[in-house]
Length: 159
Image 1 (cartoon, rainbow, N blue to C red):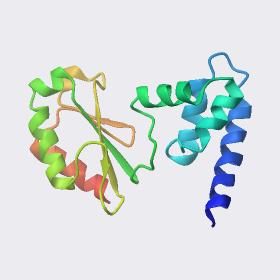
Image 2 (cartoon, one colour; image 1 turned 90 degrees about the horizontal axis):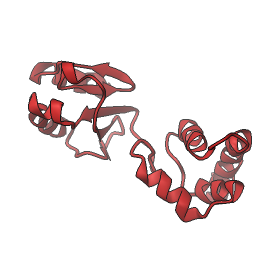
Image 3 (cartoon, rainbow, N blue to C red; image 1 turned 90 degrees about the vertical axis):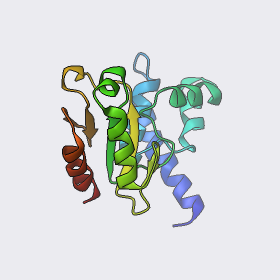
């Protein structure tokens, strides 16, 4: 597939999502979610299309996209591992677990393993403070993590 075909595919697929949601009240966030769900990230080529459809500047769309940490500007790995970085999890050993996960995966936050299996992301509360430290793997919550359970979670993510 050529670069022009790929850009055309993004435009077509993103355009369909934009058209289906642009008449909603407050459509920007739902459109960004829809596009990320479709592609696994929000392609840069989609931003001017969104801006034009919603009568916004490209800077406004870019600003919203970069403000919210759940939106990605590049594809994620096959699995996304989110580690809670909030105070409750930190106080229960979250920092040491985060360092262990980085060591096991060989990456830092906001990076993807070389084999494309795992993207590691920080989050600032998963709402399980009473079960800290916590993580989320592909949308599934895991609480009361310790050295052994975090290694099991990383092994699961590497598959």
